[in-house]
Image (cartoon, rainbow, N blue to C red):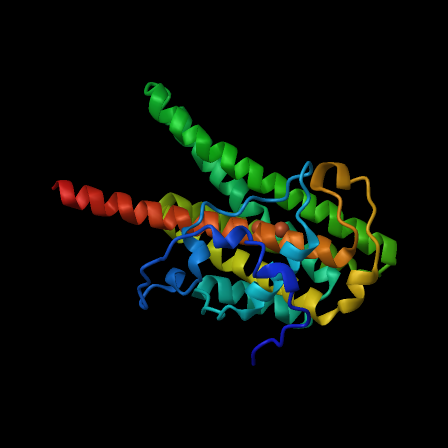
Length: 276
Ligand SMILES: [Fe+2]
Ligand SMILES: [Fe+2]
């Protein structure tokens, strides 16, 4: 079932959005990551910038775009993870479930940072190569920090609502999920980084879509003002609806970054094969 646009921004045709600056992609119907719109070719959209909060019109446009995109079938591991989360927390979306999602979302970046640091130690006699690996560390750290802001913001929203959370379901289980997901991400990355990026891209796509669906299903969030000390670090948004749309856009940026890594490794592989 498709989503009927709730409010199409009137200015969207006149003012190009962040996704309009891309060229055409040649799609391969056999590759899951190619079932995307043209934004795959972008430099990944930037994550939230506290000095330049994203305009509300652009956020609403992003919502419509995400909800209009076809939902690709996630890989087996991702589907198992989503299945466990649905079983434990129900299929319906709520802020408590998003907190669990954010707790889990950080760990692939921690795993990649860890593996990259080990690689730097092994390659310390080739400083130029180690320096290139260090770029991966910085990238993983930045994504991790971005996820951490999501977590702080959501925790605060929940505290303000005084929502009750069971210790087992919302204290213990998320730790277990994060522990398991960390080790799977770590192992996949060691065996073949593309596998780990693919799993992460599935996870981020799920997160992006979940946030946008939640905002779409709860128009009252647009009337709920948001003010928080976290706005200094994340960016100031007038209402909770726009705040969650911005978080969804961050998840999109993470997804596109992972897809680009997959694409880059495929390109490197083709080059290596071409040189043989
Ligand atoms: Fe997140
Ligand atoms: Fe993310």
